[in-house]
Amino acid sequence: MVPRILICGDIEWAQKECDDLFNGLAELVHMDSPDRADFLANSRPGGKYDSIVGIYHRGGRTAARIGDLNKELISQLPGSVQWIASLGAGYDQIDIDACKERGIRVSNTPKAGDDATATTALYLIISALRLFSHAERDLRAGKWKSSHNPGAAHDLTGRTLAILGLGGIGLRLAELVRAFPMRVLYHNRRKVEHAPEYCEYYPAERLDEMLASADVLSVHVPLNRNTEGLVGEKMIRKLRKGAVIVNTARGKVIDEAALIRALEHGHLGAVGLDVFPDEPKVNPRLLDFPNATLLPHVGGATWETLRNMEIRALTNLRDFLTKGHGEDLVPEFRE
Image 1 (cartoon, rainbow, N blue to C red):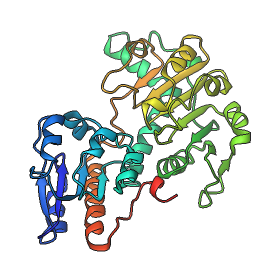
Image 2 (image 1 turned 180 degrees about the horizontal axis):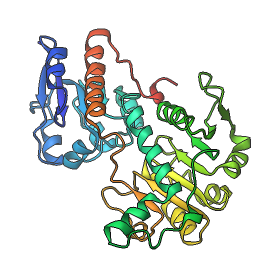
Image 3 (image 1 turned 90 degrees about the horizontal axis):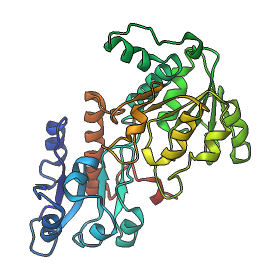
Image 4 (image 1 turned 60 degrees about the vertical axis):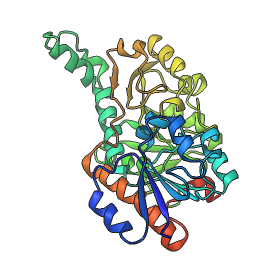
């Protein structure tokens, strides 16, 4: 009997590659459950998802139908499941501890979205410093540049960028802003040994010093129980007055209420946000700030990136079947 792989979410960009990867190797079962109750019912012995060994998980699109892969759902998956391949760098919709308890390993797709997300962060930095979003709103409203304040707009050249989390996306952003050039500082749990010389490392005991030096703080840490609300009141107020915060990671990494207060009080000069705590809902207060550049979580939404993500997630499943493991185990399984 060939192993069965459950496809949770459509394969939109790499169907041919999917067929090639699993031809003669596995039976692909496409999830057609309209809701969580139906999914759980069909995960029981004798159900259509019984005996699956791996799951392709398409993040938000899967969650829209069956919810997050939390402890309740993980505990009711067929006992045969051994691998979940998640699409995208973030995997906060999957309860990793529950997977560990069940002996289910989890992979993501790091690097596949590095360039697209880093260029999104760069756009947000440029727009926030130059107040381009505000200028575009005025133009569309027929006001030309009547409310544009050049004194509040700034060039990137010579400014200091602080990167919170120097993973693949942060490294790519560092490469991009070097062209202006910007000075690049970063904070990580540990020093990144392969980082370019121009990336200056600030350990935990020097974090306040890094924040005080930054014109822009760009957030690139994963969302987990240790990072939720990481960028809070204290960290935001350590930034120099007029600094900019950019977030292309996850909305809940930033304390949104503290961010809004800092905008209201004028402590932050601008923000650039591609992610929000309760997507697709956006706090209406953010919409009122002319110095806020806002995007609907499109950082990795390009043809090239999504295709590469699909191929990488599927390849992790293929490698699990042929080698016993995929390449991109999430860090919690490698520590």
